[in-house]
Length: 115
Length: 110
Image (cartoon, rainbow over all chains, first blue to last red; front, side, top):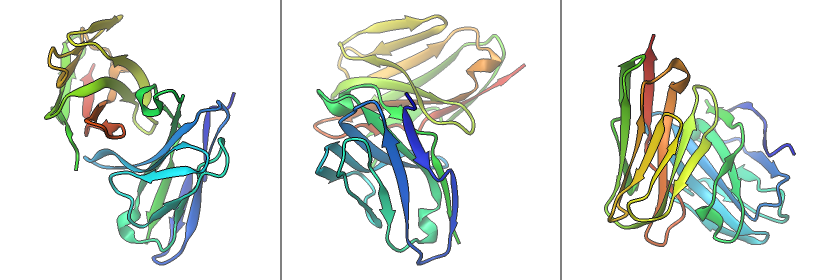
């Protein structure tokens, strides 16, 4: 199993550009989530999904969109990038049956810089 | 905002010294999870505690969950250079998705 994969690993954007961060898992996990990590701020939840077709907002959802058309994939879209979105983004997944109450498996992260 | 507080933010220890990080919530947590993130890496799950007063050990690591299920601690005995990284606690304050503390960054001086 590849676990949780994220692409790209690094990305530089200009203010106003859009892009999609990809996340996929091959463990048949129903719960998936996106976090951003900034120095001294820990991991903050952006959006999460408890299953295909179901998404919800986390602590810092503004400027980000998500969709969950399949169990495996959970892309994160930045519609109009801003310098404040410079961060490291982690995707995570876990078994259902309580979803977030189980061990979270994290992807390797995407380091995004917005100029 | 963050509802799971973690202290200290940084800890520098000499190799062989002990280390403890503390996690607190103003509301009852249904469970507490602990993760370790090596520099440049991603968080990796260490353990989950569910029961009030629960204590679990993993070699030199001891995890505790408070009686009121509002606090937790991670204690490392005789730190080694391989313990370097940031340790995060995470829990569910009330009926919320998983919330992470800001983490404690551990540096070990050989």
